Length: 189
Length: 189
DNA sequence: AACGTAGTACTACACTCATAGTGGTGTCAA
DNA sequence: TTGACACCACTATGAGTGTAGTACTACGTT
Image 1 (cartoon, chains in turn blue, orange, cyan, brown):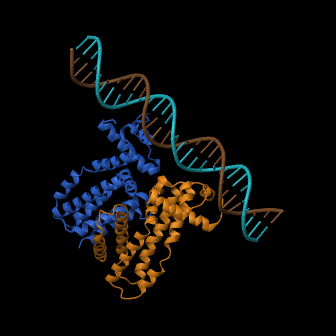
Image 2: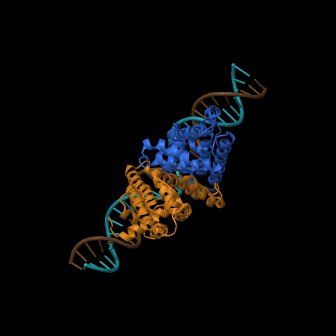
Image 3: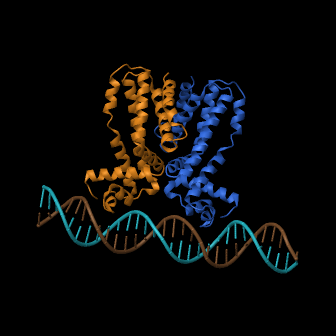
């Protein structure tokens, strides 16, 4: 088993791309090698088996999701009113949508988690933590809205993003902005 | 190419089960044969290629989703108030969740639609029609709530169901009922 | 400075395994 | 009798994985 952490990370990033582009069926050790531009057999040397590869993809995804300092700073300034929540949600939708491959890969992992207990544990833990962090952040920041507000927004925006990324013509692009605004309006008590 | 419609339907139902249980990777012509309990090679005789199989699975799924007469009848009786909407949404969540394999298979198809234009067209059309039908039905039935109400509920409940089916421990089962109630409350203007 | 060692990159091979497709035969019904 | 289909078996072919063997680089030792 090879150790080189940069190489491992770049293999995992390549795997995310492959997963998003070709799906579970196209995710093979050799395809990861090719995507990462390394000689065939390299991924085999870094991951004992498919299980290891998949769970490490999960870890890697959350590693890459971390940097959110700009958003946090942005929340601190200005008034804490409904308009601010709306702006934040627009930002959220754009930010997540723009990491298309990551998001799609995560959905693939979710489905796979149905069959792989270890992967399921990992994703459950990470996503719970993410939900809780969102709630805590929102409440602590003094923005309007309660727990339910945050949960409702997470649920509806997630599906909206999924819809946009997989079937973009279901909700016409030009309606999405207004839709997000409406969703925020309703989610606030 | 074989014609027998019952056999074709049963192959497609088998394919839905396989898709939900084993994912895209496990969906092979032979696996469909095995699941349907027919001799190997049968699925090959009924579907020219993988593309044909997948789009026909999509069609079949929507064929099976039709029968909703009981629900429609149920809406007609009793008062048309907020409590009724809540009851309907609880029903919706339970009904969809109980067709687990169908729902999971549909998500698999969604992801695959990313790569298959024909499948994408099919799903887009069907899902748009489904959304519109939900809106029209809601408005026509005289229930409280507007267009946005319906869309918001569709979005958030869909993601909630996905969460339940793939990572059941993210939202503890006993909280789901109350959560649905809250979501309805907020979605109504 | 010469040497040895450890860890990793790279190449190539072999082995397994599964899949899709097709041709041929039997069966049933019009 | 004919046509459509169910069933069965065979095969080619491809894919995918893991690993043995070699080459390179860095670092530490004497």
